Structure formats: C-alpha cells, structure tokens
Amino acid sequence: MKVTLPENISEITLDQFQRYHKLSLRTDLEVVDFNKRKIEIFTGIPFQKVNNIKQSDYDYIIKQIDEALTKDCEFVDRFKLGGIEFGFIPNFDDINVGELGDLRNYVDKETELHRTMAILFRPITNKDLLGYYTIENYSGTDKHCELMRTMPLHLVNGALGFFLNLSNELEIAIQRYTMEAQAKGITL
Image (cartoon, rainbow, N blue to C red; front, side, top):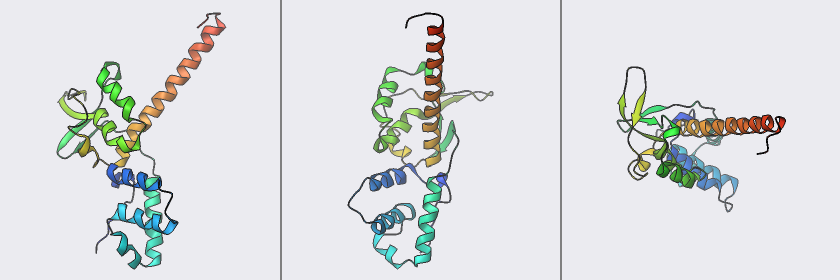
C-alpha cells in the first residue's frame, strides 16, 4: 500500500483539517487511538490497518503530520480549484449585507470553514492586465462550499491570518485615535 504523507500545510485539505478538529474535541479517546485516527485522516490508512505499521514508521508519521499542521503560511488572494480560478474579495469596502451577515455566522466555527471560504473566495469573472479582478456576485455559500472542502489548508490559514492582521491593525488605529482625541480634550 502506497501512503502519502503531508509534508507541509499545503498538502492538507480543509476537509481533513475539519475532520481532525472534530477528532481533537473528543475526550473519550486514549492517545494511541487518537493518533491512529489522526493517521487515518491524513494518510487514508484504515484505522484497523494502522496496527500493522512498524512502530518507527508510526512515530515518523505522527511527527510528520504534526509538523505539517504547524507550518506558517502566507496570504494568497487567487488560486485554482476544480478547474475554476477563485479570487479573494477584492474590496471589503464594497462588502454587501449578505456577505457580512454570513461571515459573522460562520467565521468562528471550524465546522463551517468551508462556508467561510465560499464567502471570501469566489470565481473570478474578469481580470485586467494590471492584475485587478472581479469576482462572482454573492448568492450564498451553497454553490461552492463543498468544493472549498478540497482547498489546501495553507490558503485557509492565509485568509484567516489576513483577518487577524486586519483586526489587530483596526484595534491599534482605534486606540491611537482614542488617545489623540483624549489628548485634545474630545469626549468620545
């Protein structure tokens, strides 16, 4: 049996991560059973067959999976998946009520990350020579959310990291503005 191990986060799909996250919430498993199920998720080796793996290979596989899950990643605004080129929402100033409402519903739930990604990344409908693009109008997450389960995890983490950085920058700007206003005697 040929086994493919993820060497980095780009070789892990969102679906695998969601299954792993669900596994990590279980409190009824011993470490050995947890690791056997982790191997099943990331390699495709059936749970019962993991017992047949040499101990040294088992240890290596666990180490390799753990390393792949912890790799840093950069934000990527465009990618191809299933023959479709997807682009990140190009301008958050133009976000509509439906997009924002759905983002608020899904963004903090690992079980709904495929829906979050279907909001943030949509098929590119037009590109120009300068690299600017437009994306498909938002009509809910149903159309592409299942395809998003197959997207590489580094793209997901890059998008979530983008939001974390944006949030941190906004918090700093608010604090700076508040301090400047107070220094000027302006009551907020």
